[in-house]
Length: 53
Image 1 (cartoon, rainbow, N blue to C red):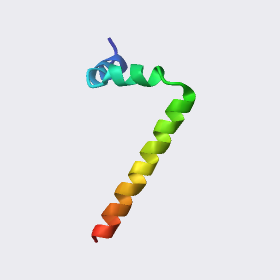
Image 2: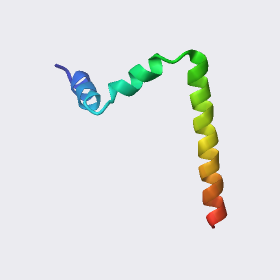
Image 3: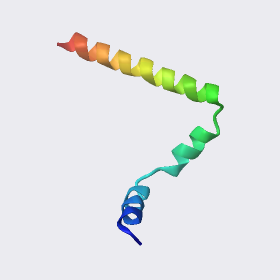
């Protein structure tokens, strides 16, 4: 095994494949919607943090 393969194996043990499989079951539109929802969530978190200062 070369060093690249060893590095890949080190990272692979920490990857939750069930999340990847779940995402692949979604339609492209559903994936876009999830990404948009996450973006809106981040905006809300940033706004809340800014209001605390």
